[in-house]
Length: 367
Image 1 (cartoon, rainbow, N blue to C red):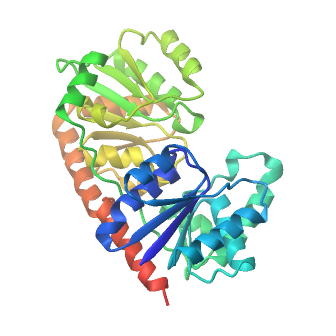
Image 2: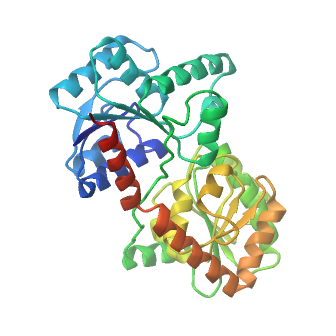
């Protein structure tokens, strides 16, 4: 079984990370993979390190026929059995390849969430029309959460015959003791006080401003230290907010890097997002047995419930602060939830579980 993964961009965002995980885990499920995406970028480098054949294609949003023709040529030359396409732009080109360039192989549309709200209002109608077209042309449509699956149905994008909910799966983060010790020393996160942390881009989606206001409340009632692992367009405004809240002596800014070495240091790990599909960082919190406070974003609720985490309304810093303080004050509650979260991760969100589900789907779609 040979599968071609297709995605337009080659940076490492959420969809690209999912592709990389599938490239990493598929061989154990008996699936050979190749990749098509834009040339350059960390996804290409990481895929080649795994030994994956990469076919550069200049995907863009001008919707020219060239990339679709290139996909068709790759499918033919590499004897591909299934096309697994990620995101709307790449799947549009794969659909064109089937409509106009003779591709007959099964097509999977891995949606990775609804993103129309991120674009100019003048283009939203067109994007929705294109999404309905590719959904109805694909042999299977993969949402990443129950909420996205319901939106596919209610918006008449796809029906139950083609919708297949398959959750993201990740390997368990395993930083070395040396890496953990290095960031502990660098950030001065000593073991004598609890650490409350968050891993996420400094972007409106992630609600880091709410986290900052919450930890300002926590700081008045706990000796905890705080750490933010991430970078982004709101860095200057978030740092100004932190300063105005009097957090400069207690808050550490780690910048954009892997969150893995920081996770063992976090007594409470927070997700303050305003919207999500199914966030990888929440799965990382679960996999490493962190005590979790998360907003009630539908995608997050696919991963955890009240048995596994403190669930708080999005945008509510006081409720978030109360959730953090409950876990800091009650180690038994924190430990019980963390154990339940890790157990749920192992049952539903491991890399092995995800790749096995896709291997079954590939077999089902092949003639």
